[in-house]
Image (tube, rainbow, N blue to C red; front, side):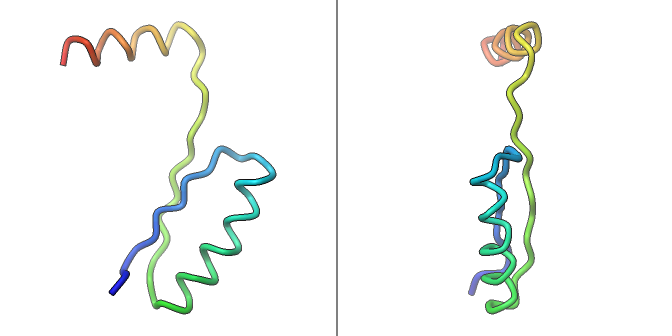
Amino acid sequence: MIKKILLPTDGSEYAEKTIIFAIDLAKSLGAGVDVMYAFHPVPSLRKRAAMMLEEY
């Protein structure tokens, strides 16, 4: 049984259309929805994140 649905979004027009679908699906299954917002970080943050991943 599905208890949670992960809904990733970047705020785009296409991603926004999936919100209605995910909510309707969750209601029909009696599941919850966890929303994850994805963004494109500024170059300096991307470089720092890459360095941190290399250290890991």
